Image 1 (cartoon, helix red, strand yellow):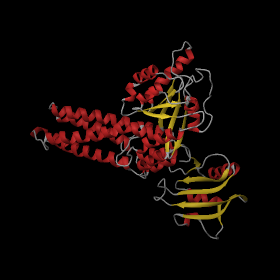
Image 2 (tube, one colour):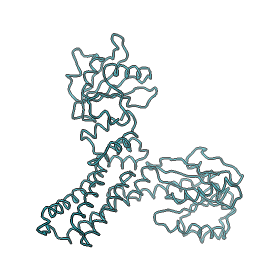
Image 3 (cartoon, one colour):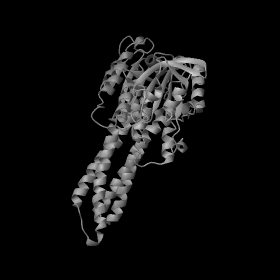
Image 4 (tube, helix red, strand yellow):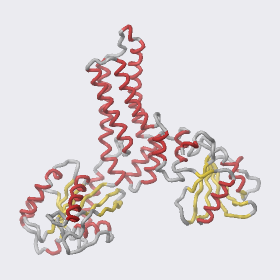
Length: 466
């Protein structure tokens, strides 16, 4: 892709999903977009030429291959620099026949365009100053968003909320670096242009802000990929039936034979605009079956990864000793403020009355259900949604991109080194190197510092029409 950046190619691509549909949209961007469109488009209104058309106008007409009619279309006109890419751009809305799509793209290629590579439209927007790099990445996140929370997070980042935070941090470091560099210019006079106490105070503030962004990744990653909910318990407690009831489809195999679920089964659904990733796991028990034991090992791994644990117990078979052992085994998760542990008492439809011993465990969050009869499943769903609604997503900047997290960790390490250097009285030129390192990693996030390998890796993951 990057080999094309030095030229003025006009690119084209299908911007809607491949396959047949009511309509399809094909995009053009580049210096020859208007000329290429005029070569194949005849407006219904006599005398209208795309090269002379006003920006933000839509024109009805027909596409011809020489004298052969291909389709009736709408052509939208966007003039540089006021377009998505910052270049002259055209969007052709045609009928969604795969034949029409293919022939129209062939026509554009024949008239001088070339096929866009993955993410090339957004890459051009980045190079033309329409987005910084973190905003461009948020475009991909916006396309992939599958819930209200992930949509709002991507939208906020695309609008520059995260970028503004990074640019402010970078400005503070640049101000610090300028004073340090000034001292280097007057090194022979042994002059200090700023109080070291002020420097340390500024660095502490920057480090605190960087750490807040790093800590926010745990929440951002959950919002982006869905909140992981592990459904665990002993064999035949009704875990798979519960998963099927929550998903409202027969996702997991249900059987009376213990050990039926030998590997984790995952599915993500959106509930009231929030994405939850439910994980049905192998039953927890001692087993001599090698395959089943591998599944049990994976269960414990999923427990560690999850934000919410639904421990399902069979109310008809659970004993006080068993529940005591369960609470002891999962005490570390129960007391983890970043993880929720919900005790789900299943099979209440088979009870005459509630076992008296169970009341001593009600200090835990407990929900009684009948997965078989679909009773009280709504209480579980309400509890899960309530936990997400309690999260305040509006008043803080949230990091959701692993690349950004890696760069911020490097920034944090550099800030720590700078502080140590000041306290230990290291030479100013060594401290200046560490400041430049921190600036480098902040610049990598927004694209002020970049390289071809990084850009190729980021934009190569986009869909072709974006």
